[in-house]
Length: 179
Image 1 (cartoon, rainbow, N blue to C red):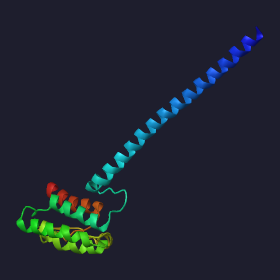
Image 2: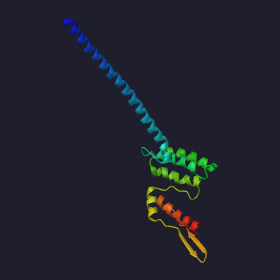
Image 3: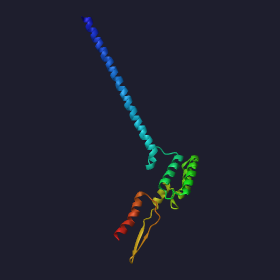
Image 4: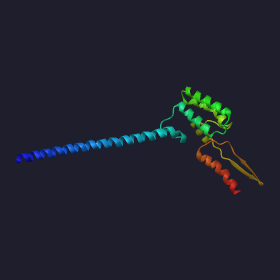
């Protein structure tokens, strides 16, 4: 009898070993499936951000000069006052072709500087970060002068940051609503 008992114990241990190995393989299989789904989800999110991020000025990586120019032209087409004209349509097509040959942002800006007047009119311009810094240092508030019932509001040219824009607009707005 002892021989049968030993064989049963060895067989039970072998079954437990096989069962545990199958459980580990089963868990690895599910882990691989879940990791694959998670990776696909992350890649999909990255692609959505890469494609649609520029619409809200969000970039994972700085765009190439060509892509930068094309994004700017697309925004001009969306927000420009005169983009329904034939002049804009012709200019847009030529500019998109010209963007294929740009090698740096300065070349792209040169093309964009030429076409922005067609899209937005004579007061439209490309403003660089350096220009914004310079302009915010030279910010001039509007002035309001009341003299014998006559009000003069002087609105100097504005180009500055968001806080200065709010101050500029609110100064005039507050006066008009309180007067």
